[in-house]
Length: 363
Image 1 (cartoon, one colour):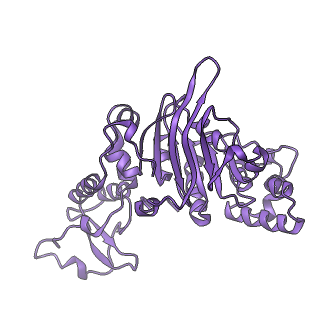
Image 2 (cartoon, helix red, strand yellow):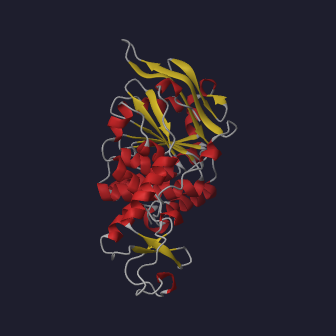
Image 3 (tube, rainbow, N blue to C red):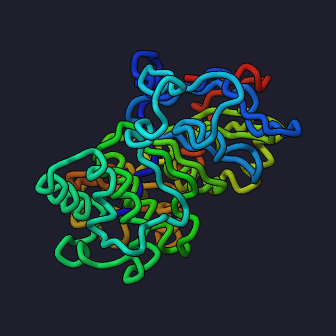
């Protein structure tokens, strides 16, 4: 399974304030000596949203994340989780309500996989049967068969398997919020991509509200419903969906950070629609291609990504690649001109960024 190109939450579903799960209000972290890690940050995260914090090293991404569960205390400003000011909540009780996944997992080496996953439910006093059922459910969810993995210890797992257990442990008490700090950074590239795909599926299945920190722009646009680009001092430079960020990055720091490869990245997150398909059916001597069955050679589906389309075009004839709907019916052909048109379409539909970083919206 691969991550669909743009199945992010629709912008209209993020427009109301009633579904805000996390809100940072002028959140600031300043250390002794005057170093400012986060500068008066205003940010909202909506229910079921996967918000990615991305930026260069030292831009305050992880500090911002840790302010939400009070691993880092604010210097000024406020943070609200489900409408409650976290300064008024006991830090231990707060953290038991918020899942937390870090790069190096942090599994307890002397405890089995099942015991690791059940850590927070045990602290919350769940009965043994409920803990056992929840552990089995989560192992199935992260594609680790319980009968195989429940009694293993962390040292008996691969890095990717450890990370999956870490995600399962963070979700064990069904928290409304999940914080993830470079969760896939310690895994090899192939394993990283697989974990991203699996986590995307899990998040969509459960609907958990997530803040994920990464320095990898490719990971950010692949996973995020919206992406917040931070600069030095935790300043919010742009907040946008992936297509807008790539098609119309804010000038200056964001454009430099996204890099010259943003058009290639757009290929990986842009879906084929009917309007991208060629209208003509070929020369007279060639039968009407809409009537031909079965379709020979490589095909694409409506909703396929443009990077797959480019690969298929390399093996296609001059008339392009046949495109099928989800019932398998031929709906048209995609040509190189269609790919270019699709890129222009998404670029035209992307909103222009604010001209001033201070005008970046919070919702």
